[in-house]
Length: 267
Image (cartoon, rainbow, N blue to C red; front, top):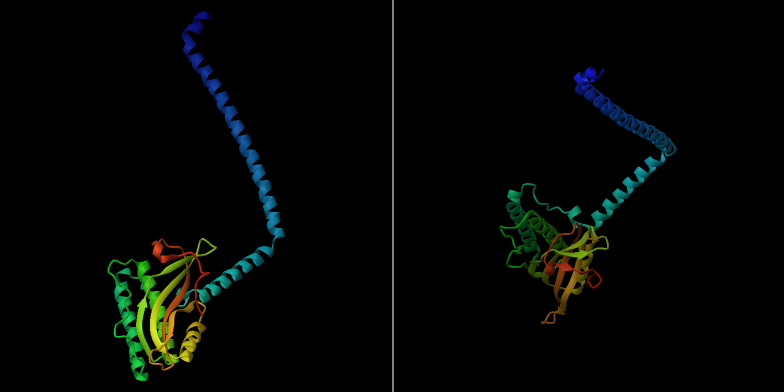
C-alpha cells in the first residue's frame, strides 16, 4: 500500500486538487444560478405589475401624449408671434460658401426695390446703401444675424412707403443684442436699426401702428424727436427699429448684452 501510494502520490494529489476545484466552482455556479433565478423571478413579477399598470392607464397615456402635442403646437405658435426668425422671408442659404453672395443679392433687391418705389411717390432716400458690416471673416451665425436685420429693414421700408413718409435721412444697422430670460435656456434677442427721418406727427403715429401690426416681434423705440427748425409742423425723428427673436444663448462681448427689458423704451 505504501509502495502504491509512493508510485501514484502525484497523480492522486492532482486528482484530489481537481475535485476540490470542481466542488468550489460548482458551488459558485450554483450560487450564481440561484441569484439569476431570483432576479428572473423578480423581473417577471415586475413585468406583470407594469403590464397591469399599463392596462389600467389605457387611454390616459394617449390623452397625455395628445396634451403634450397640443402644448408643443401652442408653444410653436407663440414663438411664431414673438420670434422674427420664425416668419423671416430672408433666410441664409444652406451652402455656407455662398452666404455672402446671397446676402449681397438679397440686400440689393430690398434696397433697389425700395428706392424705385420711393422715387415714384417722392420719398427722399439716403444717398448711401445701409452698411451691414459685411466682412469676409464672418461665420454663419453672424451672417444669420444680418439676414434678420435685413428682414427688419425690409418690413420697415415697406411701412414707410405705406405711411407716406417724405424723407429718410439715415439707416444704420446695429449689432445683435441679447437679454436675459427667467428661462436660462433661452434669451430675448434684439435686432436694432437706427433711422433718422422727417415726417408729420400723424405719419409717425401711422408708421408705428403699421409696423407693429404684423406681429409683436417688431418694435419702434424713440431716441430723439424734435420739431423741424423751419417750423413746418413736421418732426425730425431719430428712432430705433427693432426685430425681436427668442433664441439659444450665445457667447458675446459685454457690449452686446443687456440685463433685462424693464428699462426699455418703446411704443
